[in-house]
Image (cartoon, rainbow, N blue to C red):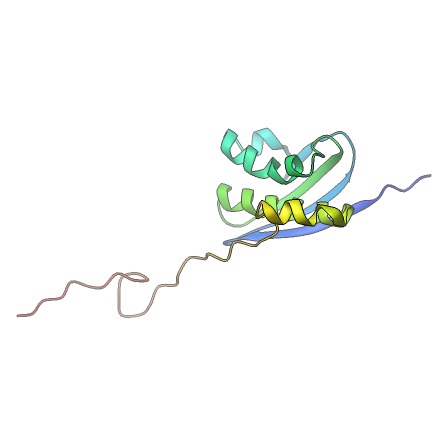
Length: 131
């Protein structure tokens, strides 16, 4: 029995985390037990997730199984995108330059700023009254 190569990677964005398993196949993407198109309903999110595969010109070469949790749909799409880019890097190290030029290997560091005590939000202040 021949054993297929499996690539495992993790991607994060905001509070979303995506763990993926990538194997050679026909280009099927499954997210949390649903099809890729069903889980990410808008074309914008779908293109965001597929970007690393399109840059690497390997859209129909790998099957991807994703376990995503936390955050919202946009954060999860960004997390999946980073995880796929990292897994592609494991398959072929020569892809580092094109993926890096597109900004696909950089984790987005922007997080929600925490609420401070004694005020209603992170930056908002209670109304100031001089008299």
